Image (cartoon, rainbow, N blue to C red; front, side, top):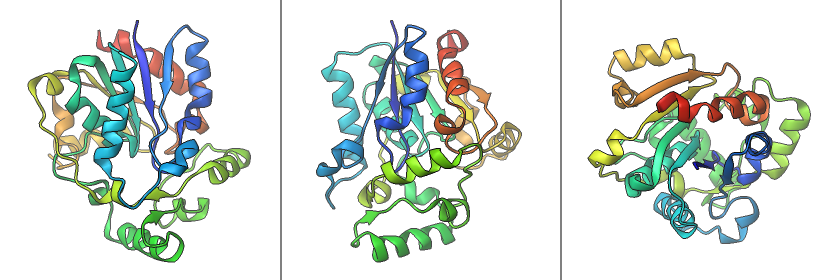
Length: 254
């Protein structure tokens, strides 16, 4: 039986997936919601030395330590960077990789490399002003929508308040260290699914066709695509619909 391993995006812990995981478990699925070191209830593990390799190793250790096979690995946003590294390390334990409003990280690139100049400047400013020089605090909802250009569509006030209160500042090194991928034949051949939520699939198709460096990898035959129109955090805005899409993954790629 497949096990879904859910990796949250930046600043968030395994609690992010509660609504999605509950709906999936009600249908008989096995679900592991990951909290990365230094975030959520693991905040005590935060340090200036934490980097992306620590995150990848942590998820690999959780999968291997539980002796999980036939894993459907799901990464949301920043979690897609971690998922790319995990797929590179243990492809034999995975059956599918799902990216939610995210994509595979090109080898030698960091998450910060994905950002535009004004976003990089904004992150640098809040790290200096609010993060003691090594933590990235989660921007306010207003800053997420303007400075960070991340859509909050579909999240009600209670959801925004919970996200703000539960979020954890994230160590800067996890955003700035490049991810090195070997991209073995087994990793490349793994079925992969993109669930686009804040970025329309028509635009994704255009970027793939234009050989955009961040989307070129999505042109391979191992890819399939789903669209769930909402904001950047569908686990808050449309959790039941997201659960249904994830439950369809084995049939979609089988």
